Length: 298
Image (cartoon, rainbow, N blue to C red):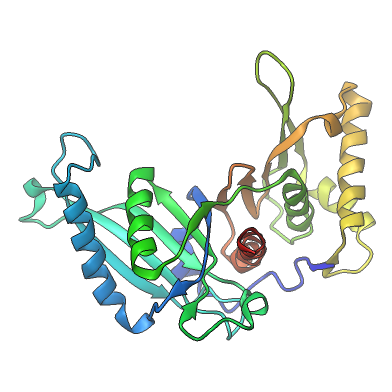
């Protein structure tokens, strides 16, 4: 059984300091442990990564065609994003652009950001040698060309590997159940499930919206132990939603593929794209994503 929202709402996380992570679309990656990474050298890493980007651009790396940008790199620590004291502080990497025209005013514009984190990931890495730092989850927002070059520098410098992290329909259904059980305000948006129908010449998506209070009432009848979730409960919850839909529309959703879940807590797409909507539940969502990243690495 997994913890549901019991251990989910993190009251001790400063909402102001993590607000910039909300309502943005983040692409998910899993990352193998970093070799000889040190929090004491973050400023040095900023300088080295900046030089690496400049060198790659000298080789003719296309960023934004026709725009000569001066790119500044900032690597910093996000100590608020921890599930336990054993977790390593999250690491934020930001790329800012300064166009030559604006250098007098030195206006900096954030063009790409990515962050490494591990929330309650210490259980999985108990016997890791000291030289390795485990931050198995990497999230990016911005052009893929920047993701590739930042990833390339980290791979060369810390001997790690990145892989896109997809989210299976099974894990999406867990997210639907978990997030439905979380307390949110009365004006919460509907829970929406998006299914894709296989085997058709034209792609067809089915959107199924459920009033958040109805979804919560259904979940409350299914869940046996508050604060815990089992696979059986998730299956029953989804089956109830499917049979309700079949009764009204004569369509069997169990034959379609669940590709996206949207709730007031977060939205997640099977391609490994996530949007966080509530700072209170950010740590809980990251804990689940850390687990998925670790299982992909192992």
